[in-house]
Image (cartoon, rainbow, N blue to C red; front, side):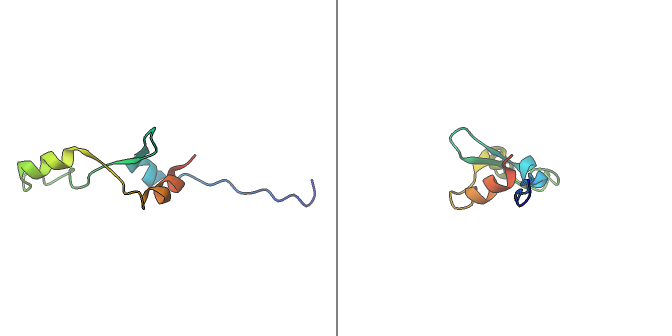
Length: 70
């Protein structure tokens, strides 16, 4: 097999894989930040809004999909 170039594999970006998931429809789902500590300082309304999952914008989604693809 002389002269055959073998392409390297793309590794999964572990930090991104822990933070984002791709849904069946192809959207990138994420949890909001600022829900880990110092929750006594934040208002109940703020914490309630952070509880919901969010979706990444259509412009940013391809970048994250490339990082977490297997």
